[in-house]
Image 1 (tube, rainbow, N blue to C red):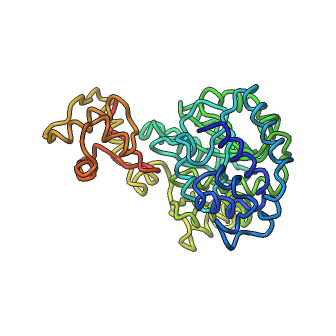
Image 2: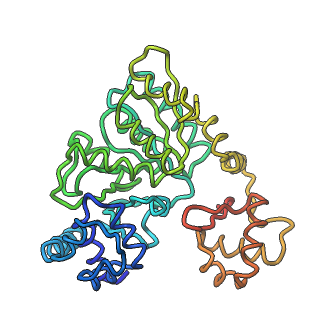
Length: 377
């Protein structure tokens, strides 16, 4: 992405802190941040019903531009990636959400557009029961779906337990933060966060020098929900941040699951209520979750790998199917426009070929129209 476009994206992000859905809608309409900035004096020509606060903010962007330039310098000094909506590295699942942020700041090694991404959330007062649920769930999930990315919020309780279990079981894990990347809250989780930089990462929409205010924790929940295929609620009281994430996930038409608890247990009440109201599927472990998500193919392939039964060539493939398989074996996770070049198959035939490969369980379409070769080793 061009440097000026990145600067403009950051500028728009800065002036639209309380209007993320509207500035994102404006960006989609205009096609680029640069187009918005070039037309900022007559922005109503692009969007007649543009929010009044955005119109007023666009009238004078000097301060926001200066702050954006400063943030670019800060990111460069600290090894932070600036992920702009529209770039390949931006979480494609999140991009589908109406109120997705224009810009994210990321420090880490994990690919945010993995084949499988889930979030594990819940109370900050995680009980021994909750800890046992997380331990068993993550351990079994890592055995059956080893390519899954686990997202949470690095908070006390369920969040930090989920991150640590992911690290212990060799899974990448990403924390979505409620502040800038110039400090860490809570500070006592610094050791875990440092480990995540090489086995996951830290992600935020907030500029540096942004405090971890209460509102920011609520805002970050939409990123946790939006970048994931599913939300797993471990424990929650009748009210809490985990329930907020689950509600947002439902609003995004994402899958939500909850572990049940005993009637009367304070930190199971929220989970039990979600299940009762058909807002979450009941699960008791990773096997339930995998079956509900339709990820059994992952589990079978991992079992085959453990048994030493790996295939390098597919049987009974047409010439076009083999060409696509070969292209994805060389470089997995490609979009159609890339695949038509690497496979040599015109778009007119490629769609049908990809469909038959999906039916054979060899290719899966991921978020953003990216195709993944399932048994790529």
